[in-house]
Image: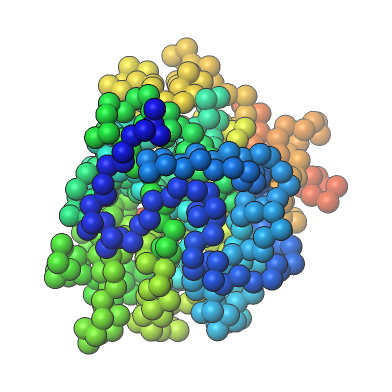
Length: 497
């Protein structure tokens, strides 16, 4: 039995990454820095995450090897019934810069700041650089020789061949082939901190309870039934004491280069960001002044983001998050770098054609329906070297297989729309020429970059071709809508030539 096994020891050097094993959902839900900074519950906001069936912890089973959380469905929030939203380590800095706060994903988060409107902040990101606090996201690591195999059992990714220092967008899957959550999976580069294969993942804040219960359940089965002895057990760790910053925009690399990041086992080599391409990652440290007066603990630096711009995500020890943020803001200056909130982040990601879980994808959506067939690696498809073997593979593979080759196809598809007149919001009905309902809008807003009203939604299969004319019911009035390829704006990722 798993409860009788002894867990494999984690390298002491891993402390430089400051991770802590996650044994209970309660620990994940309320990290120490958030527990110490509770606030009264702010008024509800349309930006607040709406989990379809949030869960409440009712019991926990622990041992040194794994965690198992028993949940029941309730109307309580993901962080506990009657609990106020958490705060990130940057709450005081946000307030100092005039942030307007809203509840989001169980946290009190800045939606915008006093210096710029949401639209101005959006444009600033596209033209210069913005710094986003995304510490509400959940950071995990999976360590051990069978870690890639375990993750391949719950995702359609080919992780056994993912090079160290590389990332891939993926989805956690239900046995039905629908999406539990979307995630980025990164194969951490080998180091004394992580001598064994280690994969770093980031999942959504609003699905915290569901994701942890899901991972706990499947990891329990893996370590009990599929791992051949203690040496093959997978250690799941949640970075409860780390924060996350996203530095995004055309000036992001210039500003981060000026910070003089240090890499190498001893932190003695200067990191050349010109060699860090989109979907690449490395471990580094940041001098907190230009005079070498102090250096951070280990930062996980990835060239990625949620805006369609070049940029970076920095995983940082929570007690150093504010110092790093202030260092970057000082280096960038007000003429190059500003703080940005959830409002700009939402319109930026929509222009980039990126899904928001709980809105554009959810527990009822399959990868093919969501236009995410590309996350299913070629190696995992029919005829691939590692065909199938993941949850929901039968449905997923049949749907991503071309119909001309005998594939099943899907009945609905995610599309982009340009809407005339008033903007279409989530829930607006999409109708055909005769007024019949053919789909629904899942996200929509005026696009600050294009000056047009853009939207994302689902329509019946066959209506997804670019240029197809449809209608959207906005406030009871039919508005002309044209199917448009996504992204709505050109992405500017820094790729290898």
